Length: 264
Image 1 (cartoon, rainbow, N blue to C red):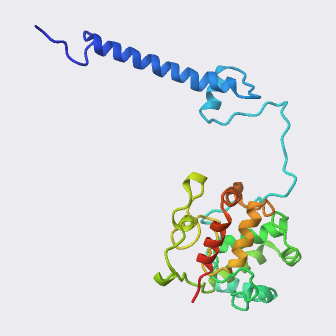
Image 2 (image 1 turned 180 degrees about the horizontal axis):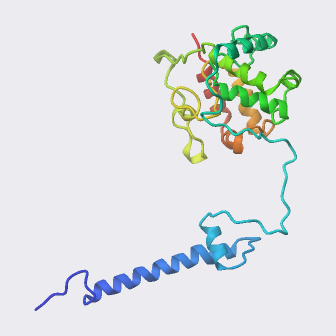
Image 3 (image 1 turned 180 degrees about the vertical axis):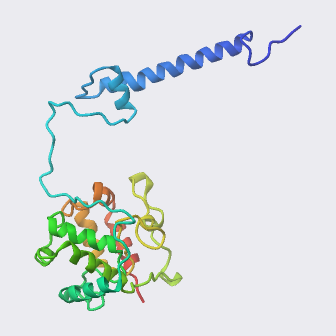
């Protein structure tokens, strides 16, 4: 007696399984890519292909009749890259040091604040440059900073950024005696769509445009996280920080601020 091979069209079990799998795949595709999109509220598709593209996450052009919604506030127009600012020479850093004399009351003579303002010493130059541009454009609002940047030219802001980036920053200080790092910093909160703070800020890794946080005053970190969470600070690119801060608890904010502010 000859037994048909497993993967053979003469094997009825193989043929039945293959047909059943194809039926399930086609049914699932029709349900997920055609029926479900059509069932969405306010869904308007020009055809089946339009619905399939939408379900697949492909960007579709808005109908000409749809009004373009504009934000009621100024958003950042700065595109940050790792190569945003070229390496600055000694002359640019020196000019930046002269310009920084106006900044010493809040940010300290060497970029280390005694007034609960952010420490700028050693901060990434792209971060400082972006924030200055945002203050100047109105994307970030401050009663103190806005008038100070009003007369700064683009070259001035680049040289200020170069000077502060040149200064030695406060190193991380997280001894074992201080206890383990907060979970929100090293592990985030995946169920709340929060990435670890350290994956963008500081020693664990740095995302272009993300500030160095070690040594920053705890009160400043808390104030900025709360501002992002309440939508009173809106100059983050693509609302990244607002989306994170909205999902952070008060305990998360306090723990991360204490961790980064810790110094000898």
